[in-house]
Amino acid sequence: MINRLKKKFQSEKIKFCEDLINNKKKNKIFFTLKWFLEAFARYTSKQSFDINLNFFRLLISIIISLPRSIFIRLIKYLDILFPPSFGAIHTQVSRYIIESDISLMVNTSNSDIDIRSLIWKKEALTILKDLVNKHNIKDIKFIEIGAASGLVSLMFAEWSKKKSIKYKCVCVEPNFSNIDFLHRMIIKHKFDIKIVPCVINQNKRWTEFEDIGNKGLVMDAIDNKDNMIYKFSVTVNEIMSSVFEPNIIYIDALKNESQILYELIKYCNNNTYILVEFDSGISENLKQNLFDNNFELYNVKNDHFIISKK
Image (tube, rainbow, N blue to C red; front, side, top):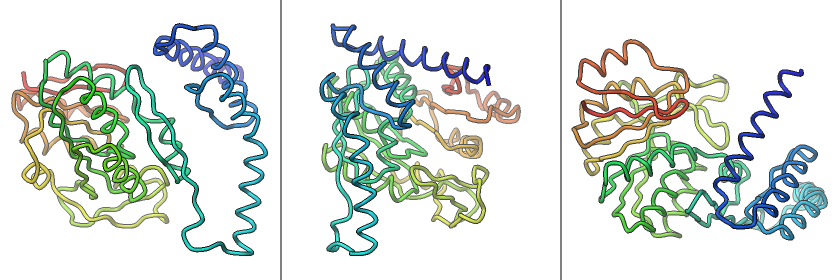
């Protein structure tokens, strides 16, 4: 119990320091007050709040959250007894997703997708931006495999627009809720992003898939076999031959990264950089395969690795 509390405290300390560094506003005192106010509300109510709001709006949001929650539960109960008109069930929430110097407004009406607005792969975005700056890439051709809600691709597109860098992207994602959100945000912001609503599988046309709300689990990552359906599959060759030749690829495919990489490296040249999040470590077989094909692998941060030709 004590060790768990220590780890939690250490995690919160790291989060506070990172948020403080990323805060671009001059008034650090108000930011610190907001941060601790949100942390207190989060621990007492088990709900997270947007610290990008000003202090007054954040305080009001916290105060009205309890009666709002009760009111929504009442509405849901009344909807069961007295169904409303068709299409009148959901409400839409607009949020600004802010990360360092990037700000993007998104609209969500799905609770699982809304949580994705808080918890997404911010580390990956930082690495991708650094990669573009380091190699002076002026025309980004990006593929994200396992895009989830696509916030990495969306924020990467917004950053590229701000930096006046050409940007086109393909997101491979089989979860319908994520696809719906991504589709609407592409239209809203007029980004050059295409969606492949499939699973990547070299051996099957239909792949085992578990939908758990704000993400989908495929093959080895499936936890509950009773919640499994099948999704249409495409091969790496079909992806790579039907779109542009990418110079940056990001893979976040829980427990399935290796089987994608074995095929993907066949299509990569000296100007291709692959960012992979290895959730379960890297097998010796994969390391040897990369070495045999003249690729180098280096750890950037935590579980994130970059693969490129030597």
